Length: 485
Image (cartoon, rainbow, N blue to C red; front, side):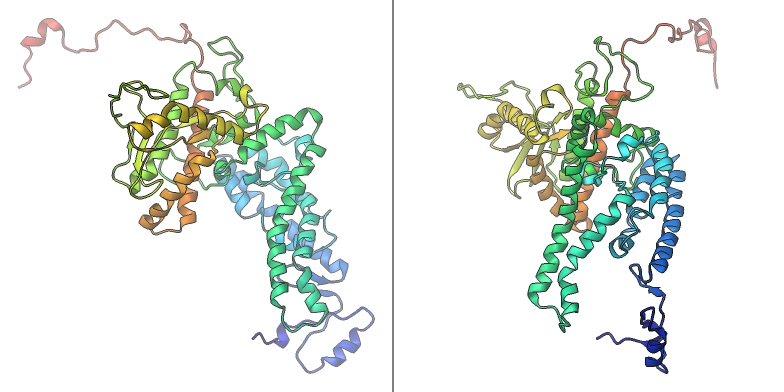
């Protein structure tokens, strides 16, 4: 077991008994102090030492968060990923072990607040938004927790998690029994959930009455499975896969209902060019581009691990005189045909559908029921034909413009991720995370094509007339008389 070593053992004596403690440990090599000493989590001892230790840590954290904004001027995706992966979590050990320091991280809150948002999203974070709790990315939040408010929450969670161990030490028990170890594991699982529940309940209390509805509508779609993979994913991969600076800053705007800058004020249909109407308007080819992007992204993993994965396969003709419910047209093709998503010998046919969570038809319902509605629409159109004629198992993968995936589309992804992980010699969690990340990149990126795409009729003044001068250096009459030998 672990044997204490004198150079690494620091007894902390009470203020009125330092000499007695020094006399007790005289000759042992142990250094006795009455001020206190730091340890891997925080510092123990007098309040002055603990505050000095916390202030030095805060100053170092402030210097750490000044670098991501420098990166964010050219690559916002890389800057936000670096912030959420490293500097954002360095303060957690100190917050969990040092009481009474909730007011010290004030400079840490002000430093990234005034420099990080302009570099990543292109605007300052107003006071009204920063007062609202910021959930993690997987719960639909920005992933930038407030260090002032988070200090007390982390300390309470740490105290609850270690309550059984603290009681064992107080009672001088040699080793914790199985019941206490189970209690520690249960508290470790429950504490993050309790913090998230308190945070989500506090949002309607701190937000203004006019913004509660918009906050709920913007947070709920981002809580879908896979929607939170894009903001914190490192911008690595083949060219064109990761978003550029403009796409990184424009991606959150449609979700929050904000107008994208440098876009026309009106559409060709005569309606206002708002973020919500842009993603549901059927004018132009942008809905087809969004659909094809989701189709190709869903078809890529089966094509990598199966040899018979196809997009828009030729349907089997219907020769039966009996009518088949749904779409019975001769060339009604489904989007994807692959073997394996529901089992090795079984072939599955899928038809992709994309919805916009902030559409008028979905404002009064949750995102889960909206996905269920669109899945049922696809089932009514293609399920009976796939079962009776194709003898295949149909799956209606529904996605949202925010990057989320419907529940029925998650099961095929999980089945494909297992052989994909075996083929690439990686863990299953890495394979399924890669699939969800690619979808979360592709769907908002195709939605931005609709927002940034051309709107209205082109202006005649900007058109440059084609010159009438021929670009052929040899006149037609002399073409037969010219020899190049």
